[in-house]
Length: 514
Image (cartoon, rainbow, N blue to C red):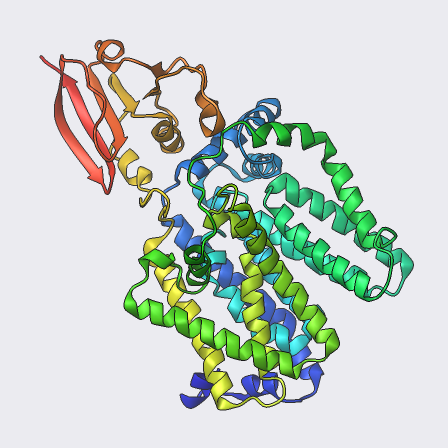
């Protein structure tokens, strides 16, 4: 923005964004610019993703997707997530294969769709210039890029969330009754599909509901007779077949003990993740100042944007605010009774934070694009670019387990031939190894044969080991894979001959005495 002009680049396009020109000139650029933006976001996300190791959650997605449909639905029912993503992943991999490129591409394409829909939504709400200004803030959003390559349902949920919001806005603006009904039908389907993809999309649909309810009451109309209310009822009806399963999932104890209360620290972490891709507890003095700048800059631009807008634009802006703030508020309130926050569970709504930042920059600069305001906007985009660099460095680092996934590197050192037994310290490690060692029989330790939740694919498995000192005694060679410290004792006739470590992930090779 401002810094580009200072370096004597061609500013004609930039000035057109902030000054009144013939919209037809900008219209010619819109579709090509959106396509380029989508390709850039997809390229960055895929490039980072392909340099990462598949980790437990992703390996679990792959194992579930490889099952017959009946077994897939059963495994989903005893875990914590709905089945739609796994079904789509199964169909996708059947067509394109089970390589990391193919598997990550499904999420990357969904993320690209979310970027495009985000730009279309902003254009629908605030106009062409606002959409073009907002696009870079979506394209270079570190958090969106991070979950764009994850072999999980978060990118798909992001796409469905933005797409549903766009369809809702079009339905509200429809002048033809038939078109309105068609759009609300699509909206109802997207809402239902969103819940079948990720239960946490309900937080976004509640944001829609709250915003619609408020506007309907303000216009003194009946809520129960509103088309949007009927659409919500239709979505609920579509979800009814899965409702008993959802109720059973709520109390099955399968949710890993990683959830946290949404405290002030974690709220600050949402901002730091969005811009510099670091949790609040990991910020240095310098990045803390950068996050403080982000908060101050967004606040100044938001106030200026509010002053520059009319009632209609303020109503539209309140939709974007509700999109991001209602889910966060609900999680904060729920956290009083039960911790439910994990940063990735907000992946599908944080795209609205990027849209909000881009929109307030555009609206603040709409009337008098002063140099100071342009510097603030440029600084926010620069902060995101720093976040993209940080993301490229840390990759899919697990902030809950404090680990960098490295199972790909370790698996490449294991040769399953010639009587080698691969022994995983627990079901977690066994599931991670499964993707990279498909031809190996991976034995694993567990105190119980029956397993649930994310370990359910290994329940009642013949490869289960409860006493390695006895059950592995006849092995000629054992490669024992574990995290952190070795807790299990190997048979006395096996002697450790070598070991390899990748961070906290270790593999110790034991061979029988000659």
